[in-house]
Image 1 (spheres, one colour):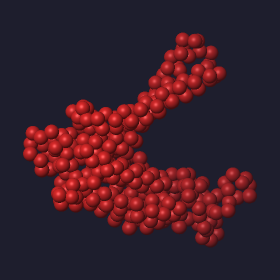
Image 2 (cartoon, rainbow, N blue to C red; image 1 turned 180 degrees about the vertical axis):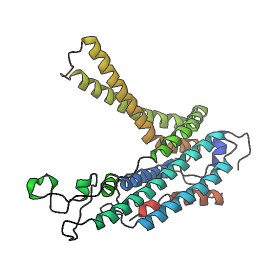
Image 3 (tube, rainbow, N blue to C red; image 1 turned 30 degrees about the horizontal axis):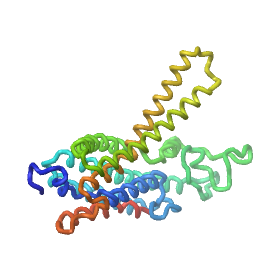
Image 4 (spheres, helix red, strand yellow; image 1 turned 90 degrees about the vertical axis):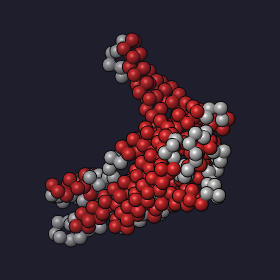
Length: 312
């Protein structure tokens, strides 16, 4: 743990979670894993659906427990600098988001497998079911080779209310995004403070300009697109010029704000990786080999966050 009163550049040695290019790659893999798990696909073999729910739950549990323990070490080491403490909390909540998504995907996949296997056609004959997209009761109980839209040639069998409810609940929940939003709010507070305190660092300014430029370009493009679409819309319901102006303005403001929030949500973790790398003068993010404990914590965190990728 660094002595109290040092500069942020000196105290960053307390931070033992991935940053720089390595942290950037870690977050890319995290977002990729969450996306595949949401669609109940194996991140390691994306052409396969999740079928081993027990094994997947074990991976999610290990990720949950290990990231909590490892992040606590970093929080204790960085307790003298509140900015690093908040960023560590942010990264912990992002890891818990990943673990929660992995657990929920395993739970939903197990329920799909159970009830789709138990479903039968009229006459009691077992059927082969396609459930790449199970969204409604009709879709859930339509056998392969048939179409609900085929008309009188096929009528889907009746389902019980319980089966219908279960069929409507076969998508992975979004509740875990609350953890992500909470972590982003907490961590960005500390990150912005660090950026302001180290603004004299040329690399910090360059990273900020690059990410700010990308976000600004996206917001500007959205404003132009939304304003153009709204202005050219002929279906104005007889609105006056002033009313239409305010309508276009409202839609444009809403679109720009949505993209702004989206950029912060998606690129915030990437931005923090490069900012921390710039402060540490270590854009690659390789941990200090002279601090054995820091290196162990660093690579252990990177490894345990990859566990959900092996869900099958």
